[in-house]
Length: 264
Ligand code: G3P
Ligand code: CA
Image (cartoon, rainbow, N blue to C red; front, side):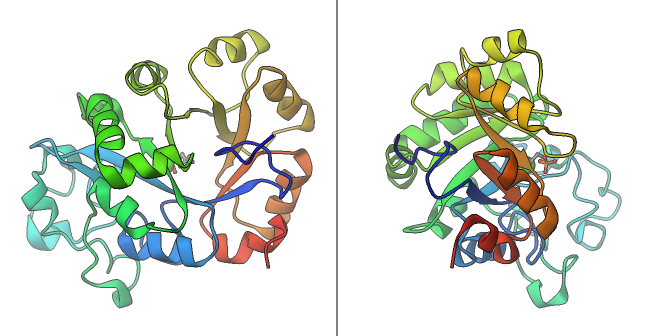
């Protein structure tokens, strides 16, 4: 078969830069997306949420406390849900210096910054993060992917997957945009019956690599689903999941791990 997004390929699994390249640049920032692309990742992974005024932005956590300078800019709001901030407020936060002072001035990106940073380069895994905090996000992301020219081109090239843990949100998204491959994130490989149910709307599962066995991988493949694993960082662990026959490997360190996938 061809080299479809997340599917098995003769070149081994595809390499996915987690939060861009979260091990070597501030997660979910343009700096990390460029780092992921330059490091040879086939895809970058980003987390999308909706601001209080409905703008899709890229951010992992439920609150700004860990990765931004929120206490300096909005004292007392560090524990507020990140989705209670407006887009204009989010733009005032520094998302780089908590990782390293070298990255001071990195902003929280817009969803479209992921496609702009990837022009001509890697594809994008878009995780719909904590959708209960971002009502309407499935419709908004579907509209964006199908109508924005750069996203549309990436979708047509087979280089976009939408991923998420929330099965109801995933089903809603796949009904809105059936042409975009959907990955069900799930902590461990479920029974054959559950896999068959997932296969009605999902193209792949994304699961934790710890305790994953070759039999699990075979079971998922028999259900017609590809297998992606997160978040695999050490050389030993990357080699182990390659040997299990997974289709995609998400890592914080794409630059260190590309050689396990037969890349120069
Ligand atoms: O690739 C899936 C992985 O990103 C899910 O975990 O917490 O890093 O979003 P998390
Ligand atoms: Ca994620």
